[in-house]
Length: 167
Image 1 (cartoon, rainbow, N blue to C red):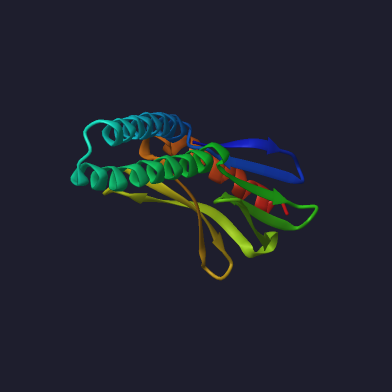
Image 2 (image 1 turned 135 degrees about the horizontal axis):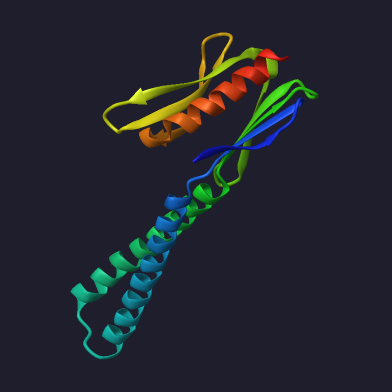
């Protein structure tokens, strides 16, 4: 969900977090950890008692796969918990987009190069893509939000428009 976390005459800060995805990733990581533990216990048990080459091969395939799933789940959880932050700063005369990746990535643009915030319906997925439009016509994607969040997003786009036009 996208919401305004700070709004002053010189600064507007918008954050987009995916709380439901973070909860889903928490369960995914826990399930993957459980699976990884069960595969590890089964592998030790197999090596001690009932050794067979095909079981060893299955163990050597599934154990790294379960470790990879845990790592992927943690990365997605990290991304969804930190969320994207969009800062309009009149004092610094710039717009900063902070996107979570392995570490936070900052992209700064002159505030006068941003024309507006807009949204576009994606009917196949029943979502809206929210983006900034630059003076050159480039679209800087901010987030994808559910079609049920149309009114709050339109209100935020109006706040951005008002902030940019007051410059």
